[in-house]
Image 1: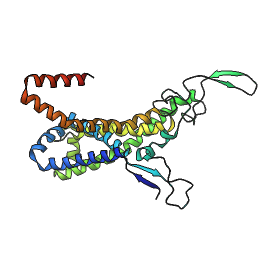
Image 2 (image 1 turned 45 degrees about the vertical axis):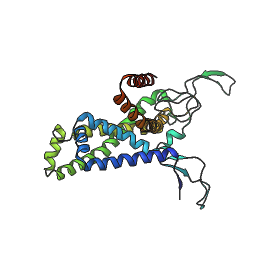
Image 3 (image 1 turned 90 degrees about the vertical axis):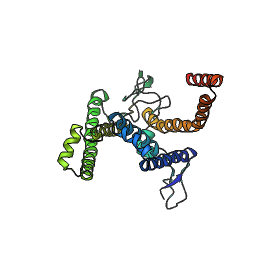
Amino acid sequence: MPFQPVILITDALFFLLTAGLISFVFIARSREHLRRPWQKVVKRTTGVVSLVVLLTFYSIAILDSLHFHPKLENSGDSDHQYSNEILSVLDIAMTPMRTHVEKTFSAPLSTHLFSKEMVSYEDGSVEQIYPRLEYGGAHLVDPVQEKTGDILKIILKAVVLALTLWLPAWLVIIYWRAKSTDQKYSDYLHSTFKGETIYPLRAVAITSGIITLIIVGTMSLGAQYHLFGTDKVGQDVFYQTVKSIRTGILIGSLTTLVMLPVAIILGAMAGFFRGWVDDIIQYLYTTLNSI
């Protein structure tokens, strides 16, 4: 087996949260009083656009929650020699950004370090220059002349690849929707293009297209450059930014779930007792909220 699965405590909590959300979806579909509000949400453009963006971030967090020990390269045929390093599926997908570690700070899309260093030449002369990065733009012979054109070329290829992935997928989705509503494919395609469908599919298609372009573009540029530059120890800032998505979702979701019973109890007490009890609870809430 090329890897050994690992389930961290945070992974278990995240999977538990995911299972709870999936269960809620199935429960809401079978109960009218729960299904009706969500139907209003998915019929509004702002609602579905927000939902698509949130699902994108949540999908990234899921990929970053699938952890494992990779098998050692020199382990031969042995199935029991694995690295102590714990990686995720997202780490593997972003391998160039994860492994391309520079010496120190660099600016976004830069080919040189941010600070100057003294360099000695064979003739004995010494010069203070901005050294070339080891990975960022390393494929360029003359970064000053070639970098802009190379970045535009990468972006153009990313646009073509994103369209190749996005367009066929949405043609299939529109065909499926047309078949499920007993409409002609051409008529439903025209209605989707004009935004006249019951659900705002046009907004979803545009949003998903932009997200696909951003993902493909950043992954393509990140393989050759440091998109957001590097930090003090030379690590790719964009990679760390994407890795923080899972942390943000875990902290935001779990703290909300943990505090929900306390909030319900305090809210019930404030409404039932009123008076000075309500004043104290409101004071505590506003103080914590301001902090």
